[in-house]
Length: 455
Image (cartoon, rainbow, N blue to C red; front, side, top):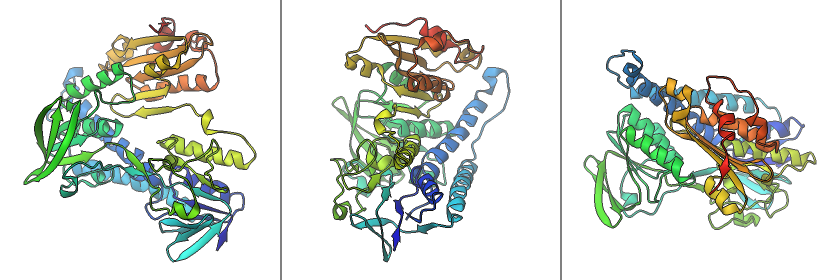
């Protein structure tokens, strides 16, 4: 069977691409062996942010007395938390699946696909072909080769969503955004939580001051965080798991009821039969693409997490937009994209462009402004003063180089800077703007009026 296009994977690039291509009258095949919607809908953004919302509700309820509101004892019904999560997942997945199955010229193959040749793909017992193939198979948790790991029950970002009972003591290996989001949420639900991070700081991509503020936030909520700590082995116990670690040369162990591995992701490229198609991958298994997402094989593109050029829903979605633009003769490119993401601890971190350490390494003349959230009246009024704002500006062009907003609404506020960066507008546009009081955003013009050369 020959199609106008084959899409392998129904994630945040795959399913909108299917809709767009079929709307052109193309006959399209979509292969998906797992749940429709990919990581975001099923095991990523939607379920995790739903759980985090429940955890925040518990946290705010416990703090009622701080605001003069007497709430009494607060308890968490973990079964209801997880049922609410599942309802949201089913709603989102069902919406996408219902839409896709209603498209007349789209054939959905409920199989994991693999290449039989450069433009031939096996789906179950059939081999289909097309001159245009789009790979959107995403990524999965990386399981580190820790001694004993195959002998103990452990959780990853998928299986933790299937828990039926609240862990008594959750041990998290990995102090990145996934590990910290779950650590804070489960601590707020009532679990004892320990985070183990091998690096000198948590949130390794972030500047040291932001990482330190996040560390202090975690510790203030009762999360035990061990940095500069290597996991040397794990063992099964009668009550769960024992994790053996080494901190600055000293060995010790931690016993918990559950173990979550959150040390990174690996691309879902190893079962695609890429060698049969002659498609090149890099040393980590990511499919290599050019600035327009095309692989080394003409007529084959790789979109989303599997290409290693972005690890988020928004970058995957943007990949599908680039692919469609190029199809219409446009020239949107990966290199046009400004790095941007959020870390959904509470309060969140919104990040765009360069970090301070990036700016120092760039050789540019840089202006920087930093303001603690404790100086923001809205944060004081809400008694949520964790975090800081940081902006970086090119001293010669006056354009933003990057920003980090760690605090109330940081993931939303940062978009005002993102838009100015895409517009290549000078920072003075925002500096001279009138913002609403009382808001967190109103401090951005003030901050931009206090820029100083990066020492």
